[in-house]
Amino acid sequence: MPDGRKVDRGELLDVAKDEERARSLHRTLRSLSSGPDPKLREMATAVLRGDLTAEQAFTDPEYMAALFSGAAEVRRAGEKRSAAEAREAGGRFDDWQQERRAEDERERAEQDAQRHVAETRSVPKHLAGPGRPSGLGGPRPEGRFRQR
Image 1 (cartoon, rainbow, N blue to C red):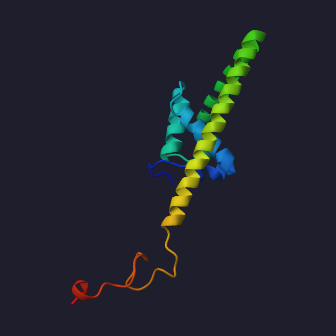
Image 2 (cartoon, rainbow, N blue to C red; image 1 turned 90 degrees about the vertical axis):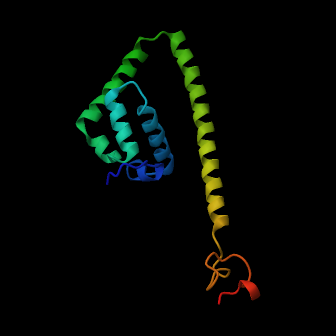
Image 3 (spheres, one colour; image 1 turned 30 degrees about the horizontal axis):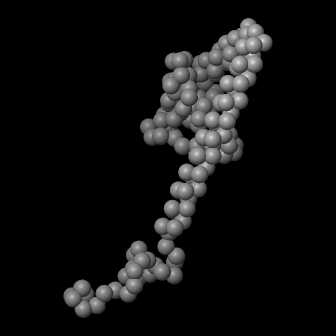
């Protein structure tokens, strides 16, 4: 149901099937949305805006052709590199993996903090009640503050 809003990782769970894959898919879509391939930029941006579902994007023949074309280019480039270039690329890949793990940890910490704030802001039912819509504070003030 496209509606032009920003899509979060939770909404990608239908396609991704678990939280880790949804996080990875969301990150990949963000990366593709600013990448060099115009067709993949279009697809990723549409999914992230909610104009296109991930399932629609991954079943569209044009978008799939663009994805597979990019993968074939990467494979060809990998086949052409020397042993020294392969070692260097392996080192860069290790660095990238470490950065990604750190980003995952930051995202988890942020989610935990948001969850904690939401939990601490919720009011126990025994404190909420008539005349106390927020559930906070003591009894209603008497005297000059009393409604007439």
